[in-house]
Image (cartoon, rainbow, N blue to C red; front, side, top):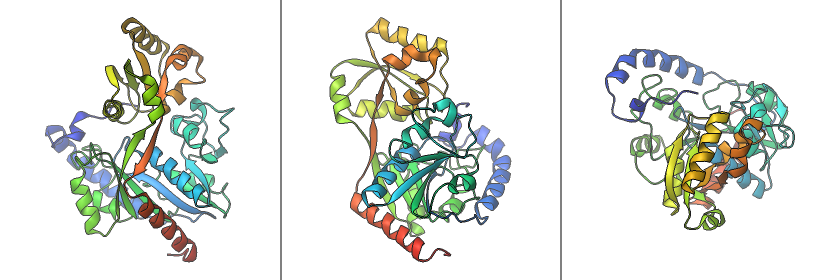
Length: 338
């Protein structure tokens, strides 16, 4: 996957203005697609999506939602496209048999919380779930084939929605108003920074706005101690990972950024190991990155020496969010045609 252009995340410049007509056309098509009616699954569907291309925190929210549902006595099952994996599905993920090259990195994280189905055709994947399940979709908000009973949109507060333009002029997947019109809540991840505009628009529509933050595992951070680290990541926003480490008090001596869902080469893996060894640094990466490294013999040395930072999504008002989620789910079951 190519890196996102830098102009997406700053005030519109010449590139954004030149691409604006293409963005308008893309946005019109995306908006029309958003409003198509999807087919209903036997199970209720909770969709975790984001407004922009790239990482915003969908998978941590999906994991938190799955755990919340389990604790409430529900039977969640995750549904994901399996981005980066070779299997089109529908197939249930087996963590003992499948690698990231088969099912993608997200699926290998999700399956540790609940059964996970990989399917490029979302409707076919949903058909594997029973009426007793609750389907939690990791991504797929802009895909109209499957009806969503609850749609939660995630915004990374550090980046917001960038220049506010639609792809390719900006990072938006579709016009902002069209996306907010189909959402049931907005989840803001991180300290307040660049999300004020979208927050105001969401509240003007009566959407609940929930604040949350990524919380690093305290035992992992304590185990690192005062040692310096070489942090590397191939996710949608590597800088967010680096900032999380720094905020937790970790001494990040070197950083290495790679494109989202990056498949590391043997040469890159060896270079990371050599840099860390030469400077006496601990290799630290994300859980998604380590999931991609495992099972690949060409990068076995890096997989053996790298440590993944476990993170969970913590809500500022967890009880309120849980009540909202369960009440919306009950209402969807009581009035399935609405």
